[in-house]
Amino acid sequence: MGKIKKVDKVQMTDCFRSGDFIRAQVLALGDHRSYVLTTAAADHLGVILARSAAGAPLSPISWQFMKCPVTGKKEKRKVAKPL
Image (cartoon, rainbow, N blue to C red):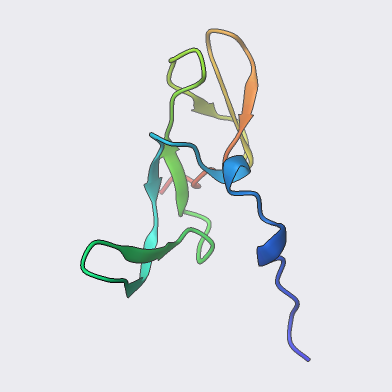
């Protein structure tokens, strides 16, 4: 048997939010208006720019969290490793 993948356990709201800028790899072309993307293929893929709930730009503090400079709160994201 191969590796068991935990794809079904991933919560998309813990990885990305509406308005986030991400670096992703194209896996396939969808219909005429969509693409199939992944950020799981490499560490440098994921959120590269995001805004907090307070509207401030978030700073990456780990591969899983970004921090708001205004409120000091951490927000979950799938953070891209800098190139």
